[in-house]
Amino acid sequence: MKIKAIITGSTGMVGKGVLLECLDSPKVESVLVINRKPVGIKHEKLKEIIHADFYDLSGIEDQMKNFNACYFCLGVSSFRMSETEYKKVTHDLTLHFAETVLKMNPGMTFIYVSGVDTDSSEKSKTMWAKVKGKTENDLLAMPFKAAFMFRPGYIQPMKGIKSATKLYNALYVVFKPLYPLLKAISPNGITSTVQLGLAMINVTLEGHEKKVLHAKEINELAALKS
Image (cartoon, rainbow, N blue to C red):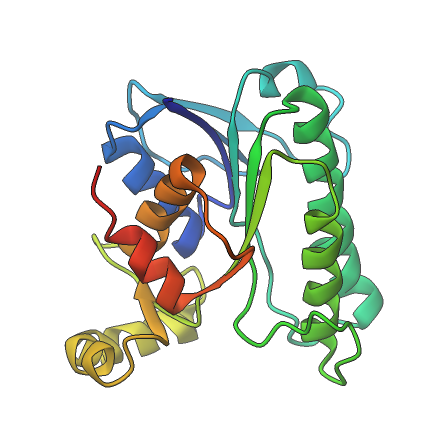
């Protein structure tokens, strides 16, 4: 099976990393990115849709047919957001997108990039952890062929990718020389944009016994050879 993937959030650090690995991989036949602004990459495998309103996908539904994977990398920081605002962007938008791609592609594998401290019980006092927990649970309850929740922890950007957040980008520059040391000290808590992309490709093709995957499983999946 060759992967035909839809990717969201490809103008961000994680999404762009996943996109680059998909474009480089012989396991991926085609990629559709759906963004609010251009990703700035041209490739024979790549098609791009610029769409402003992710709460209304009716105008582009027909272009979302015939895909067997969705890598949902779109996300926002909860900083200075109310729970209502954060839930609308993180939960409601994600579920609407998932419902749409599932309707158009019943045999799809859906992968959601979550957070390492996400709370599956939905009872956390930390607002974002509770909201992401509900998002994960609702996605896992949907009748996808398979769904996986990625909780990667620290992600090192590779291949020249930069974060859109200036503070994060400055921190990544500082930590880049320390990345090999950090990886040696905490191999199960650290991953990279390359490993994330490879893991998504491989779990789409090979599956996994777990539905919630942390850096350890992500790195193991990334290392699979076929």
